[in-house]
Structures are given as structure tokens and as C-alpha cells.
Length: 72
Image (cartoon, rainbow, N blue to C red; front, side):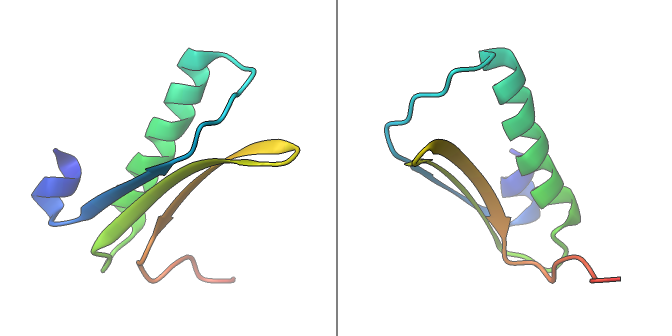
């Protein structure tokens, strides 16, 4: 609902991935990453969420097309 209200397209790409961890904490992590992308990606129109197996790890990636963070 937050993405829709801001006119942001929220994309999801998930590949079968097994993660050995606390499901509740992983949900909090993902929620925080998406929330940060929506709050701090000024000027963006898209937020993409990806989960996949990247041997030897599982990878969760949240990216937006905003201006990014200044290097300094």
C-alpha cells in the first residue's frame, strides 16, 4: 500500500532458495530493506526485490532507481 500511494512500482523476483535462519528475523530484515528503499529513494519510480541462491549463499537484494547515497 505504501508503494502504491507513492506511485512506486514494487517488483519481486524469487528463485527457490533455502535459508537456515530465523524466519521472523528474516522477515524483519526484508521489511526494513523495502521500507528504507521506499522512504529514502527520492525520485525513484521502481523498487525491485530479488531473492536467489548465489553459491554458497542465499542473496536478498532490494534496489531502487533513486539518486542513491552521496559518497561523502
